[in-house]
Image 1 (cartoon, rainbow, N blue to C red):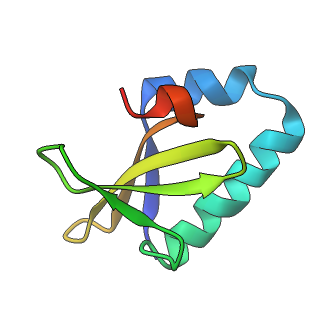
Image 2: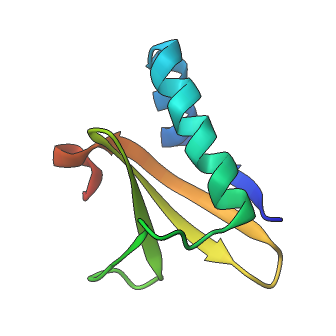
Length: 85
C-alpha cells in the first residue's frame, strides 16, 4: 500500500473545498493508495516526470508514483481547465 504525500497546493485546495467534494477526493485517493494505476488513470505527456491523472467529476487529481519508497505524490487537485498548468 502506498502512502500519500500532499503538495502545498493540494492542502490549500482541500481546506477551501466543500466537504462533499473533499470526501469524494479522499475516497479516490484511498483507492489510488491500494492500486496506483487504476483503469481510469491516464498518463500525462509533456512533463519530465511520469505524472498521471485521475478524474473525480469536474476535478482532476495529478499524481506521481514512487515505487522505491511506496509513496504517492499528490501534486495538484483542481478543475480541469486549471489543472494542467
